[in-house]
Amino acid sequence: MTYQQLAMSRLRAVEHSRTVLVPVTSGVSAVILPDGTVPQRTGQFVPAALVAQVPRRSSLTPATRLGPLLPEAALAALATAALAAVTIRAARDRIATRRRTAGADAGN
Image 1 (cartoon, rainbow, N blue to C red):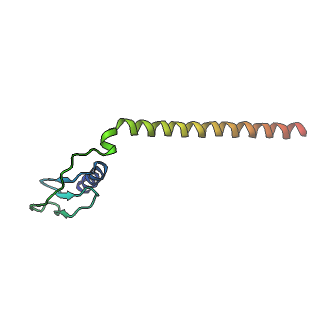
Image 2 (image 1 turned 180 degrees about the horizontal axis):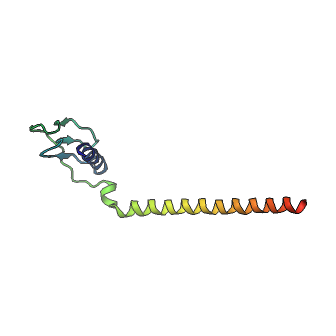
Image 3 (image 1 turned 30 degrees about the vertical axis):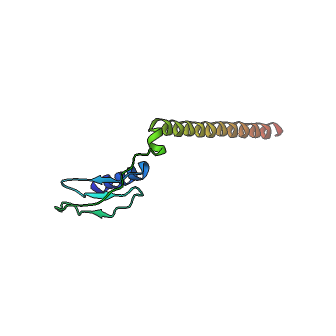
């Protein structure tokens, strides 16, 4: 789970264009730069100290400005539209198959 947490922290660093410092007492501590690179990290259960100069940022990224609501709502709407399109197409295909079958049966 330590490496999963580290991966999630890397994603957040890139998402918000910020340096992330991950201090832990029993896992992997790390310095993560805004581009997601990890220039420093400790081993698991290794007592160590990391020292780094990190850039200060005050600007907001699009992800920070929009927050979680707008992107999630847009993705949910897109998924709903895709599901509706697939459902409509499947229904049309079933109707067309029934008409072809009915027409072939009428010809016999």
